[in-house]
Amino acid sequence: MTTTALVFLILAVALVWGGLAASIALLRRDGAAVDDEAGPGPDAEDPGTAPRR
Amino acid sequence: MTATHPAPGPGQPGHRPHREQWSGQLGFVIAAIGSAVGLGNIWRFPGVAYENGGGAFLIPYLIALLTAGIPILWLDYSIGHRFRGSAPMAFHRLRRGAEPLGWFQVAISCAITVYYAVVVAWALSYTFFSVTLAWGDDPAGFLTGDYLQVADPGISTQVVPSVLWPLVGIWVVTIVILALGVQRGVEKANLVFIPLLLVMFLALVVRAVTLEGALDGLNAFFTPDFAALRDPAVWIAAYSQIFFSLSIAFGIMVTYSSYLRRRANLTSTGLVVGFANSSFELLAGIGVFGALGFMAAQSGVAIEDTTYSGVLLAFVAFPQIISMMPGGPVFGVLFFGSLVLAGATSLLSILQVISAAFQEKLGWSPRQAAIRIGTTAAVVSIALFSTTTGLPLLDTVDKYVNEVGVVGSAVAMTLLVGLVLRRLRELQGHLNDRPGFRAGTWWRVLVGVVAPVVLGYILITGMVSLVRTGYSGYPTWFTTTFGWGTIGLLLLVAVIMSLVSWRRAPGEFVPEEIPGLHRSGRRGETR
Image (cartoon, rainbow over all chains, first blue to last red; front, top):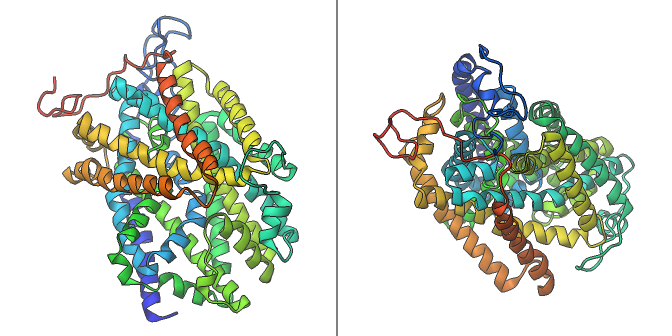
């Protein structure tokens, strides 16, 4: 491979897969808070889908 | 904890039907990645990147991901999650008159699902063909002659048995998974299929890049052509690739996000899904160009003469490569098996869009919806696409539905929410009222201004090209009937379904309040 192609391969991998790693880290940090807060109660039913009477 | 009073039972006044949910954030992320990663990631991205600047394509591609892909993904998430419904329900709750846009998205999903299943069935057949290298010395002749028995463009009733049976198999499996519901069916299937896809595809890429000549292929793929960046067509190609590969603007992400818990993180999840989709595309580019480099070296031709995309890449070029390489059958099973898994998870997500819409509109259970919708779609799919005219018909419907239907839906959605209803501030508040990456004013600008301008340009230039030159040399009567005719049919379905009464009233829904913001999106009017 030429040096230029190699540099662009490394750059592509670093930016795209690095972006994925960073966003997973962000989600893991924030996700823990979500699991703590979320309860099964109100989410289990849809307040807007009562049968039409 | 639980309620102190027993809830009203089914049929009793005040009974609220149970709404399905993902088991957690991971289940949703995996399913959303499964939806985004599809056939286009494997067979479209490598060719598009190579033809539009090689390594330099990375620049417009990443800009398109960050300025259009992820912002529209967040728009889909915010609509589905805030209004907690399928696309028609969510748009109805956004504004009653917006329901037809939701049904247009469902109609697009109907059109895509009937032909997408056929391509997955082809990949399933080729997984088995790989074992014996059934295509012999002439993969192109085998595909169009022996396997598909392609006739001239038109409508044939002559069913091709070798396509029919794998197609029936794909539909049976898909209907069973769909009938099990969101958590036990779609989520569990993705939790098995996506890791399996990743392992298989990684093995394939490792094998591809260790083949003789693979480095020449990678050299061609990553060598930048900076002059290409001055060509507007390259930027349009980048925005189109991001847009088509992320499964946005035709109801999938609206539907999927409606099954998330109320406090779920939407923005960081969108970043993970967007980057995961692009990561898989990059992996596919490395694997495909490694393999094409090997083919070029073996055939003694230049790499630029071996670059295919779409059906030709998967079902003609790859069989050639598989025949040439040591251990070809194993490589073939990995490649076509990956196509089956990537296609199946996307197919499930598209069907879920339709299933959820009919469940809510007509009061069907998930099982009823899966059986009724799945069976109808299977019959249409078999009748139209397992025949000798299946290939030209599929090619035409795919072109018009994507370039006119899906892009038109995205333009309509961004204009409606941003310009007509002016609800972007409310949706931004919804995104920011839960954990995750903050959507700033820049998000409203990207969704309300940049996206409709860029996508509007893609839509208009695409439509002008289709009107002026038709498509792929097919007769005008054929493209008019099955291309524009399909678009007309989608619009008709959207209008008719919007006129049908809701079995479950969507209007009683009240979206949650956002601190500092009125429900309608106006600032400082919180009650």
